[in-house]
Image 1 (cartoon, rainbow, N blue to C red):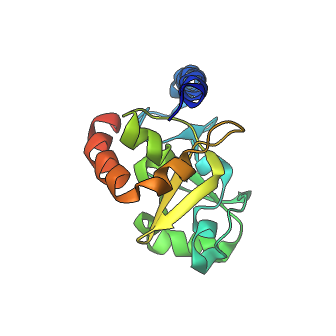
Image 2 (image 1 turned 135 degrees about the horizontal axis):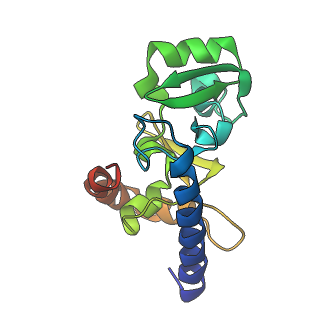
Amino acid sequence: MNTSQAVVLSLAIASVAAAGFAQSNATPAGVAAHKYNVMGESVGVAGYDPVSYFPTGGGKPEKGLISISIQHDGVTYRFASDEHRALFERNPEKYLPAYGGWCAWAVAELSKRVDVDPESFEIRDGKLYLFFRDKKLDTRALWREKPGEFLAKSEKNWPALAK
């Protein structure tokens, strides 16, 4: 990572930390404040349908509908169709994003919870990974340079971050 990318990521982390503080005040009792990347009323995956990322759901991120939603582990997930909601209900662990929906690369490389662009993702070994992306930094591209190494690091770092 070059200096410019480091500065952009530092700014992103600072803004996410500030947003995370505000979010933690809105998080209902019983939901780990940092375990899940939620918005507003504890909505996971920034309101996107978690099933839509997978081949069975079309393989392309799609916004979920407020009218088709369920709660799982204190987080509200929205879906593009009743079929997607039913698939999720039958096997939520299959569709939940890794690391609570935080940036997989940042969990690995920085041991930090960093917000994501919900349209920057990868399905690897049947698991959904989300990434931070803006005009100057694409962490999915960085992840793809050494996926095995980053995956091992993120698995090691996540338990402390999920508290």
